[in-house]
Image 1 (cartoon, helix red, strand yellow):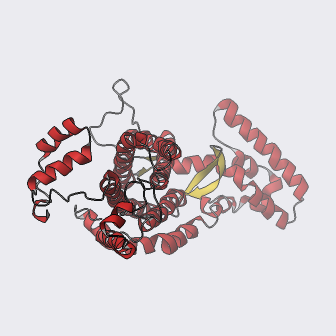
Image 2 (cartoon, rainbow, N blue to C red):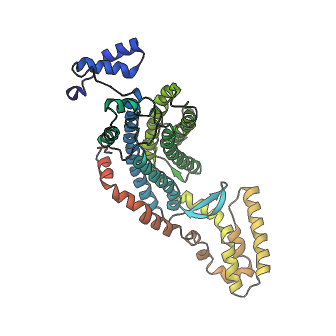
Image 3 (tube, rainbow, N blue to C red):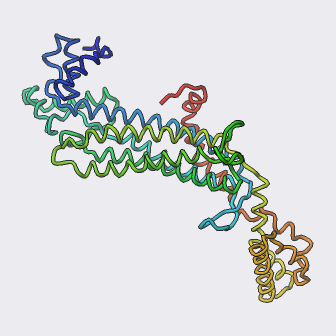
Length: 422
């Protein structure tokens, strides 16, 4: 048997499956043909789920480790981007309406933090997933107890040997014929979470591309539209969203599969899971590959960002202007009313005429605000309006991301060298 582990007669197995209509039995016969001395005892006491369920759990853990590797790479690239642009003021949005300033790096940390939370959940899932193990046809281990002539300790020892050999830390306490399909839901929940994070990031990039502030990589000869030659569509980010939405949809499927299992088992999970589990991992693998590509080549347009900041900043600066004038002896209530009138007039000009925001010019020409005329430009420096955003980036990368990257330094190195290791 050991000598023929990788010597698989697929043609014979295919022929037997057509005859028997049972995939596991077909391979048992194919294995038996190669190992005639072992044929009488192959699969003795076992059920198909001993082979299929345990194998699928091995595959899922290996797949999660591939996902983990690519998440480390993505977080590394995102952290580099956040560090580079931690000080660059940009207009923040709530409700997609202009709000207070943030920085480009701080916004990237919002994406990075989502992936970090997913990463920790993924690690927990890899560490905590219990193996089905040796359970028998309805989970009672009756066939193995019979083989060992009623020796319960031998049954337990066999289960532990299989657990150790397959590299798992724990086995599930009780099962029907299958391990509870809730475990599939848990795994796909993590995968769905990663897809959600990627979708959110890619959506933000698409919005920023529309504003011409930040754009995904665009190659020299790339065509944005077959009709509109000037277009630079964010097609990679759109592809991330498209695939991520598909991956997220699979979670509902896993929840329904678990909830509709009958008693010790029913077979309506089998064909479904062969699609759902494989496609979830193939989908998230593509999402992460494209995300790494996009983040690595993000292009920032500083002048566009500054222009949009300066179009809104005068309104945000009014409180600082008011405070300085009051400190110089002005009347807060009168000044507040004057600022309100100037703000309304400037806002109306922007909306009705499409002109630039001339609030600052109005204040410069109003003698009531003479106290700030000499240092008005300093008052409206965008860096004075980002709060602790740069410091937050530094602290977040140092305290939460760097430990992950340092722990996975070998993974990053092997990926950069083109040797993906899990």
